Image 1 (cartoon, rainbow, N blue to C red):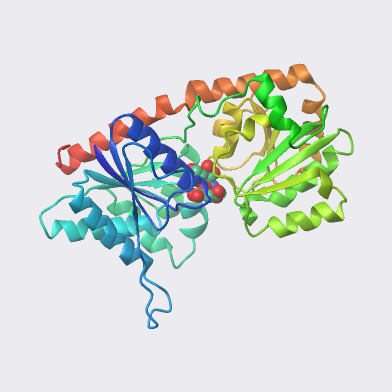
Image 2: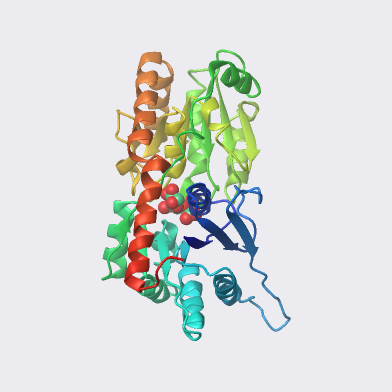
Length: 384
Ligand code: GMT
């Protein structure tokens, strides 16, 4: 198939999923065209079977707000026509499903069909879509899509309940390439850990876009309690609005020397397996992709019992779950786990098993391919 993919290409889970999906689809022989405002950060631009088409947004003095959605729709329709795309797959409902809808209408004028699939990721529904000004258009984008998927049962149920959406939404969970996200050999791991920690110290990691919903500050709170009992370091990966508050708290607690702020990182498959524990204290996660990536690397998570996380993490088996803000309990659990090698090893192994058995790319990508087939069949478009 020839598939156009649109996503937010910068830091964020939906962009990561969209990019990894494109990489996997290209590896399966499909032709993939990314149509985004900048190159997705996990792409090098030289991957076989993948092309990147930038969306230029003109800015005239008259435009106080440059019309990105329209520029995107135009580029989508151009790329679809030039490269004979079979379908578009947009990640994150707003504004991508609306731009895709416009592109589909533009091509229909020329008697060309361009079905589009929308994948819902989370904040497009739970935050943005529920903002009153965006709700009707988000619902419209969902209803008009030729196929809709959600990344967890939680998100599907929320969408149906909050948006009163009538159409069918298929759950296709997020995935991880278990060959890329995998434990390192002991030698490589030790060498990598030595960059950040002294021998005998534990390494905790938090990875996010540092938006308030991620509660990165709670990760620092948990870590501050852990280091009272165990020699440890914290890797904070990513950047965003709450980073300076996290830095300020680290200094106030006098633990700044123990925390490495690594900023945005293009690839994390070499960082995650260096850690002993992932901290994901989010206010809400529709899925919690970083926890899955960590699990595949045999790094258990201390996470919150919210949204779709319980679909991924079974408390006490392949990770630990706590109420939002429960930093004392999270720290206690972290100390328990880091002090008990056998318990830690069992949880790490269970996490890897969960990733392999339920979320490996090799299991999930065929679900997308089958979904595309059904959408194309319904749209009567035929695959070129
Ligand atoms: O909140 C984010 O990190 C960004 C957001 C996105 O769409 O870019 O993430 C959502 O999608 C991820 C990938 O599907 C999920 O793993 C996250 O759980 C989800 N975030 C929330 O629901 C808050």
